[in-house]
Image: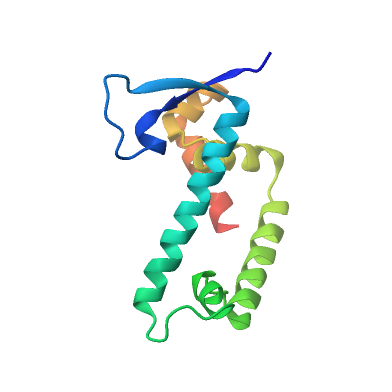
Length: 135
């Protein structure tokens, strides 16, 4: 037996009129609707681009214009060097420094919360985090 999927009618039929806002469809019907919706969205994008481009749709060029701009090679190299420097700096930290820095930046805890979690005073946490950043 097919599993039923709840859909919002307006998501697939923008001009739908009726009392029911949601309905249940089989997995196969849902896939067909989703595929049709994707094709219509793509066709709409292509129509919009045609209106923007002076010469209309030209196979290959329109898709290239839609693709995201790639980062210039120089920027990619600089970014890679910065990441390597950061990785070296992080690897030079002690386990305690890394833990406190992680709690501060990645878990979003403030010094007081870190101190409470580790059962130490917040001044030492602040000093440790600042020393880690300098390192």
